[in-house]
Length: 170
Ligand SMILES: CC(C)(COP(=O)(O)OP(=O)(O)OC[C@H]1O[C@@H](n2cnc3c(N)ncnc32)[C@H](O)[C@@H]1OP(=O)(O)O)[C@@H](O)C(=O)NCCC(=O)NCCS
Image 1 (cartoon, rainbow, N blue to C red):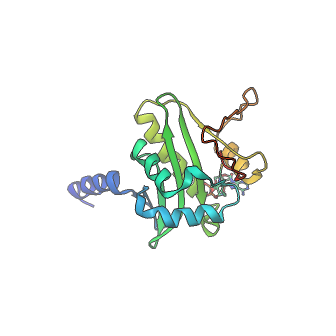
Image 2 (image 1 turned 45 degrees about the vertical axis):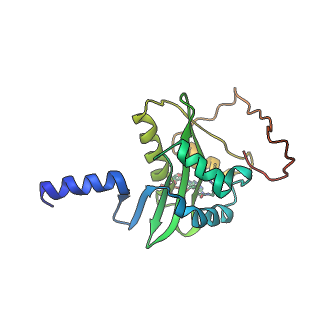
């Protein structure tokens, strides 16, 4: 590849996403991905869905955290995704999911790494995640990819919606 071609390739990756030899392209999450992403989340055991995952709620989340959430696409199909946002102090990842047939090939790590890189660029230096206590595979993934449990902390929550949902979400 000539230098000018390399520069163009890099510029297009910055806006459209990153591609590797495995044919999987990681690119920013757009609202027209919603139906495929929601279907993937529904197929994934460790992902709890609730009122914060409706089309309108996800659209609001992406507007509030532009360019931080990603999808992975292979042959036009969504095979992975992650939501990423921040509150100006800490970053948060939600709903990391990789379709079953694409697991254990580094895609989960790749999706997380790109989010962490984007958080670093905007001077967010710590990132938190929520993992259901019974999600053994998820927990193994996070620990093996370098995340540290914080047994000195507990998560507490209050529901401001007034709704009594029995759905499991965080
Ligand atoms: C968790 C999840 C996203 C991991 O995706 P993935 O693409 O398979 O992860 P990677 O291939 O990047 O794994 C990185 C490392 O994590 C560890 N790991 C991942 N899944 C593992 C599993 N099921 N058992 C043991 N170790 C695992 C391995 O050390 C792996 O590296 P290796 O394959 O070289 O040994 C995927 O299993 C998933 O979608 N699970 C369901 C949804 C979920 O629980 N999401 C997390 C919500 S908190």
